[in-house]
Image (tube, rainbow, N blue to C red; front, side, top):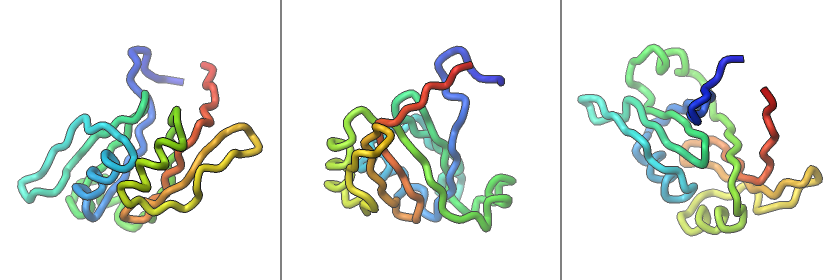
Amino acid sequence: MAGTSDGRPSIYPTLRYADAKAAIKQLTEAFGFTELAVYEGEDGKVAHAELAQGNGALMLGSKGTGSAFDKVMKDSGATGVYVVVDDVDAHHRRAVEHGAEILMPPTDQDYGSRDYMARDLEGNVWSFGTYAPEIKG
């Protein structure tokens, strides 16, 4: 399996938003992502953005840009993304403080994880927890 050996993630979930600027604000303020890059088109829409969390990252952009990816994703629905965090309860408090819709409060799972679920402004489900399977290559 190909991957990167220089510390860069090799998988990037990619999401499209009707209001990508609002999504970036929520993801950074409520969910603790770090903005790496935001590129806007001439129309002011987010053509491409990159956000990081821990050693992972995601890409996002505005719906309706007309790009090839935008066209094939046109009829896609909401998605779900799992993010590993060190302190689930502190992360949850931050999300609540910023008005995130909580779908499940911090819960201890049978398999040893502690996690919670939230929905973003456009219906995507975000799970944050301590479960981090080891990937052996």
